[in-house]
Amino acid sequence: MSQLRNIMTSNVITVQESQSIQEAAGLMRQHNIGSIPVVNNQGQMTGILTDRDITLRSTAQGQTPNVPVSQVMSSQQMVSATPNMGVEEAAQLMSDQQIRRLPVLENGQIIGMVALGDLAVQQQHDQKAGQALSGISNPSSPTTK
Image (cartoon, rainbow, N blue to C red):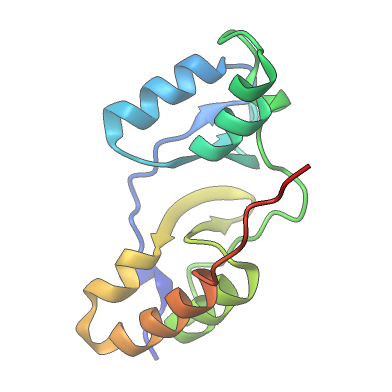
């Protein structure tokens, strides 16, 4: 069974809790990513910020671009993996939690990121990625007031 350490992206872009959402959005644009792990001064992951978080928790509510990342990030029920976790287990976790990106932590420090695409790129794992994608991509209906 292949481990995440063999397929994860190890050059992970992060943002500090105190940085603005505008700075975070600039990093997302620069690196063509839709989410960015949030770390504290000790480098420990405290949350994750997605483009959706910025849209729904900031822009849609009329907040300024100077709002700190810590006020917009997702931090409850943070889902992560370890570098020794198997690919199949990670795919199942991503499916169960409906997430497309899985931070890989070691001693509280982010050392990698596994995206659904990372699973799909590995031809031997195409079936696992497909299973994860089918679980993640369950259609939802828009909510109305």
